[in-house]
Length: 208
Image 1 (cartoon, helix red, strand yellow):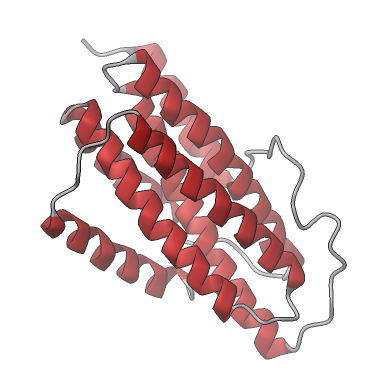
Image 2 (cartoon, one colour):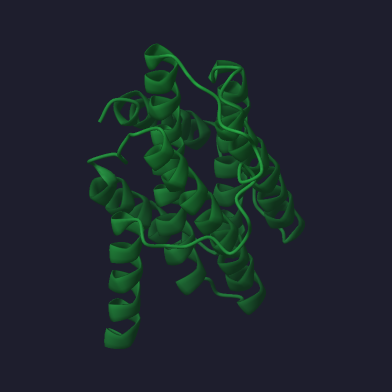
Protein backbone atom coordinates (compact mmCIF):
# COMPACT_ATOMS: atom_id res chain seq x y z
CA UNK A 1 0.00 0.00 0.00
CA UNK A 2 1.25 3.47 -0.90
CA UNK A 3 2.62 5.33 2.13
CA UNK A 4 2.23 9.08 1.57
CA UNK A 5 4.27 10.03 4.65
CA UNK A 6 7.18 7.86 3.55
CA UNK A 7 6.99 9.33 0.05
CA UNK A 8 7.11 12.87 1.43
CA UNK A 9 10.11 12.02 3.61
CA UNK A 10 11.96 10.48 0.68
CA UNK A 11 11.17 13.46 -1.56
CA UNK A 12 12.34 15.91 1.11
CA UNK A 13 15.56 13.92 1.53
CA UNK A 14 16.15 13.97 -2.22
CA UNK A 15 15.66 17.74 -2.39
CA UNK A 16 18.08 18.32 0.46
CA UNK A 17 20.75 16.11 -1.05
CA UNK A 18 20.44 17.61 -4.53
CA UNK A 19 20.36 21.16 -3.12
CA UNK A 20 23.45 20.48 -1.02
CA UNK A 21 21.89 21.31 2.36
CA UNK A 22 22.87 18.16 4.21
CA UNK A 23 25.25 19.20 7.02
CA UNK A 24 27.96 16.84 8.24
CA UNK A 25 27.77 15.47 11.79
CA UNK A 26 31.53 14.90 12.09
CA UNK A 27 34.29 17.49 11.80
CA UNK A 28 35.72 17.94 8.33
CA UNK A 29 39.07 16.08 8.25
CA UNK A 30 40.44 18.96 6.18
CA UNK A 31 39.42 21.50 8.79
CA UNK A 32 42.83 21.63 10.46
CA UNK A 33 44.77 21.36 7.21
CA UNK A 34 46.34 24.57 5.94
CA UNK A 35 45.24 25.34 2.39
CA UNK A 36 47.96 25.90 -0.18
CA UNK A 37 48.10 27.88 -3.37
CA UNK A 38 47.33 25.65 -6.32
CA UNK A 39 48.04 26.47 -9.92
CA UNK A 40 44.99 27.00 -12.12
CA UNK A 41 45.55 23.60 -13.73
CA UNK A 42 45.83 21.90 -10.33
CA UNK A 43 42.73 23.67 -9.06
CA UNK A 44 40.66 22.58 -12.06
CA UNK A 45 41.89 19.01 -11.75
CA UNK A 46 41.16 18.85 -8.03
CA UNK A 47 37.73 20.36 -8.63
CA UNK A 48 36.96 17.75 -11.28
CA UNK A 49 37.95 14.87 -9.01
CA UNK A 50 36.10 16.26 -6.01
CA UNK A 51 33.01 16.82 -8.15
CA UNK A 52 33.17 13.13 -9.06
CA UNK A 53 33.45 12.26 -5.37
CA UNK A 54 30.53 14.53 -4.55
CA UNK A 55 28.41 12.76 -7.17
CA UNK A 56 29.38 9.45 -5.60
CA UNK A 57 28.00 10.68 -2.29
CA UNK A 58 24.79 11.89 -3.91
CA UNK A 59 24.40 8.37 -5.31
CA UNK A 60 25.21 6.82 -1.92
CA UNK A 61 22.48 8.88 -0.23
CA UNK A 62 19.93 7.68 -2.79
CA UNK A 63 21.07 4.05 -2.62
CA UNK A 64 21.06 3.76 1.15
CA UNK A 65 17.86 5.76 1.52
CA UNK A 66 16.00 3.32 -0.73
CA UNK A 67 17.70 0.22 0.67
CA UNK A 68 17.11 1.15 4.32
CA UNK A 69 13.40 1.81 3.80
CA UNK A 70 12.86 -1.44 1.94
CA UNK A 71 15.02 -3.78 4.03
CA UNK A 72 13.25 -6.81 5.48
CA UNK A 73 15.30 -6.99 8.69
CA UNK A 74 15.52 -4.09 11.18
CA UNK A 75 19.21 -4.90 11.69
CA UNK A 76 19.91 -4.63 7.97
CA UNK A 77 17.88 -1.42 7.74
CA UNK A 78 19.97 -0.01 10.60
CA UNK A 79 23.18 -0.80 8.72
CA UNK A 80 22.04 1.25 5.75
CA UNK A 81 20.92 4.11 7.99
CA UNK A 82 24.26 4.26 9.83
CA UNK A 83 26.24 4.07 6.60
CA UNK A 84 24.01 6.73 5.09
CA UNK A 85 24.77 9.12 7.94
CA UNK A 86 28.50 8.76 7.38
CA UNK A 87 28.01 9.15 3.64
CA UNK A 88 26.15 12.37 4.44
CA UNK A 89 29.33 13.58 6.14
CA UNK A 90 31.21 12.81 2.94
CA UNK A 91 28.62 14.73 0.95
CA UNK A 92 29.05 17.76 3.18
CA UNK A 93 32.84 17.60 3.12
CA UNK A 94 33.12 17.27 -0.66
CA UNK A 95 30.57 20.01 -1.18
CA UNK A 96 32.53 22.32 1.10
CA UNK A 97 35.76 21.54 -0.73
CA UNK A 98 34.16 22.27 -4.09
CA UNK A 99 33.19 25.72 -2.84
CA UNK A 100 36.74 26.34 -1.60
CA UNK A 101 38.03 25.37 -5.03
CA UNK A 102 35.60 27.78 -6.68
CA UNK A 103 33.74 24.95 -8.37
CA UNK A 104 30.14 23.72 -8.53
CA UNK A 105 28.57 20.30 -8.02
CA UNK A 106 27.48 18.25 -11.01
CA UNK A 107 24.58 19.72 -12.96
CA UNK A 108 23.27 16.18 -13.37
CA UNK A 109 22.85 15.46 -9.65
CA UNK A 110 19.05 15.01 -9.98
CA UNK A 111 19.65 12.33 -12.62
CA UNK A 112 22.33 10.58 -10.54
CA UNK A 113 20.03 10.57 -7.52
CA UNK A 114 16.99 9.17 -9.31
CA UNK A 115 19.01 6.45 -11.07
CA UNK A 116 20.70 5.38 -7.83
CA UNK A 117 17.43 5.38 -5.91
CA UNK A 118 16.02 3.03 -8.52
CA UNK A 119 19.01 0.71 -8.28
CA UNK A 120 18.76 0.63 -4.50
CA UNK A 121 15.06 -0.20 -4.68
CA UNK A 122 15.69 -3.10 -7.05
CA UNK A 123 18.51 -4.46 -4.88
CA UNK A 124 16.38 -4.23 -1.73
CA UNK A 125 13.45 -6.02 -3.35
CA UNK A 126 15.72 -8.98 -4.11
CA UNK A 127 16.20 -9.62 -0.39
CA UNK A 128 18.51 -8.48 2.39
CA UNK A 129 21.41 -10.76 1.46
CA UNK A 130 21.40 -9.49 -2.12
CA UNK A 131 20.98 -5.89 -1.00
CA UNK A 132 23.92 -6.23 1.39
CA UNK A 133 25.96 -7.90 -1.35
CA UNK A 134 25.26 -4.92 -3.60
CA UNK A 135 26.48 -2.67 -0.80
CA UNK A 136 29.67 -4.70 -0.36
CA UNK A 137 30.50 -4.53 -4.05
CA UNK A 138 29.61 -0.85 -4.28
CA UNK A 139 31.87 0.00 -1.35
CA UNK A 140 34.65 -2.17 -2.73
CA UNK A 141 34.59 -0.33 -6.03
CA UNK A 142 34.28 3.07 -4.35
CA UNK A 143 37.22 2.30 -2.07
CA UNK A 144 39.37 1.43 -5.10
CA UNK A 145 38.16 4.56 -6.87
CA UNK A 146 39.10 6.75 -3.89
CA UNK A 147 42.50 5.09 -3.62
CA UNK A 148 43.15 6.05 -7.24
CA UNK A 149 42.19 9.64 -6.43
CA UNK A 150 44.80 9.72 -3.68
CA UNK A 151 47.34 9.14 -6.44
CA UNK A 152 45.72 11.51 -8.95
CA UNK A 153 45.08 14.55 -6.76
CA UNK A 154 47.81 17.21 -6.82
CA UNK A 155 50.23 16.53 -3.91
CA UNK A 156 49.86 20.16 -2.87
CA UNK A 157 46.11 19.77 -2.37
CA UNK A 158 46.37 18.53 1.21
CA UNK A 159 42.77 19.41 2.04
CA UNK A 160 41.26 17.25 -0.68
CA UNK A 161 43.68 14.45 0.14
CA UNK A 162 42.63 14.48 3.81
CA UNK A 163 38.95 14.27 2.89
CA UNK A 164 39.43 11.47 0.37
CA UNK A 165 41.53 9.39 2.77
CA UNK A 166 38.88 9.57 5.50
CA UNK A 167 36.21 8.68 2.97
CA UNK A 168 38.23 5.68 1.82
CA UNK A 169 38.54 4.39 5.38
CA UNK A 170 34.82 4.81 6.01
CA UNK A 171 33.85 3.00 2.79
CA UNK A 172 36.01 0.02 3.72
CA UNK A 173 34.24 -0.25 7.08
CA UNK A 174 30.79 -0.02 5.50
CA UNK A 175 31.60 -2.91 3.21
CA UNK A 176 33.01 -4.98 6.05
CA UNK A 177 29.95 -4.42 8.23
CA UNK A 178 27.64 -5.43 5.39
CA UNK A 179 29.73 -8.55 4.82
CA UNK A 180 29.42 -9.47 8.49
CA UNK A 181 25.62 -9.22 8.28
CA UNK A 182 25.48 -11.98 5.67
CA UNK A 183 25.94 -10.33 2.29
CA UNK A 184 25.53 -12.58 -0.74
CA UNK A 185 28.21 -12.58 -3.44
CA UNK A 186 27.26 -10.43 -6.40
CA UNK A 187 27.51 -12.25 -9.77
CA UNK A 188 30.55 -11.39 -11.88
CA UNK A 189 28.37 -10.04 -14.68
CA UNK A 190 26.67 -7.61 -12.29
CA UNK A 191 30.04 -6.46 -10.97
CA UNK A 192 31.17 -5.76 -14.52
CA UNK A 193 28.04 -3.74 -15.26
CA UNK A 194 28.54 -1.76 -12.05
CA UNK A 195 32.13 -0.94 -13.03
CA UNK A 196 31.04 0.15 -16.50
CA UNK A 197 28.31 2.39 -15.12
CA UNK A 198 30.72 3.89 -12.58
CA UNK A 199 33.28 4.68 -15.29
CA UNK A 200 30.67 6.41 -17.40
CA UNK A 201 29.44 8.43 -14.44
CA UNK A 202 32.91 9.54 -13.38
CA UNK A 203 33.87 10.49 -16.93
CA UNK A 204 30.83 12.76 -17.21
CA UNK A 205 30.85 14.14 -13.65
CA UNK A 206 34.49 15.29 -13.93
CA UNK A 207 33.30 17.98 -16.35
CA UNK A 208 29.53 18.38 -15.92
